[in-house]
Length: 358
Image (tube, rainbow, N blue to C red):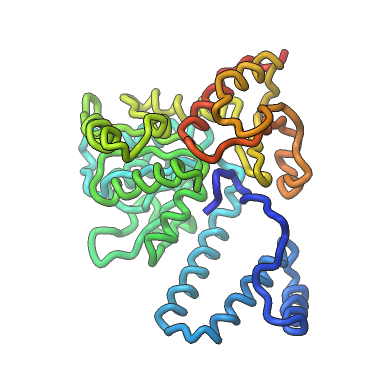
């Protein structure tokens, strides 16, 4: 899972992590070259060597099957998503048991419809209820379904069934990884254990800096109180007991209608584009340059985030050469403390309302 990035991992010194001996390493390198691997051949070499090392690890058949199937699921899902990498996407979570006539169903359908109007694609678990509603709103062409094989309840809805963009997972963890890795926003509707599991996992990953900071909106039926009751549990128990911090509440937003939810997501990408780590530096890509006054204001308001130096505006770093499609974007670059990631969300919001250069 990418650490607070949009398509790139931390940049660390290049060291080969897996090797056997120089002659054998050379044979693997030649095999990869003969196959014609053009992108990151050294990573393919590492995977091959790691797989071969398992032959001598006295690993059980069950473990080998788990690793093999995991790699196959990750490889196949990456292949399915690859043609759509230029589209922003929103994941919709919610109960599979919500009926088609329920108000929540109608809200989810309208939300997905409006997100598609803003050129987003919609990702759901591919099942019934809220998932079906969102895919009805998005339409088959703009939908992905990440289904899970269960002995009961879960099957593909009619909108996505038979589509190439329906992926059937054997493991929850590979499915969850794809939800987080592939999306640019989350929309959560009322649900049960599964929805709560997904909600808290997403928030945990962002809270700890192990996933990108992206919008998380919580929707309900008109006049519904599901998320307000959930919020009461957070504030009266988790916060008071010191298990979470006040800034963690900036990682999500309870919204009360579809328009507010859509605006929250669209506004997030008004100026902010993406971010990645380059060593200890955080590089924030922005769609429009900021004025000197705006950058100065960011330094004043978010001095607590900066570990050393200050926030400066500049161009792409040489370590970003593997992302030529966004090379021209301006950057805000600084060395932050790697904590209080709710404050990072506040920084992104401040960037989006900052005055642009004339």
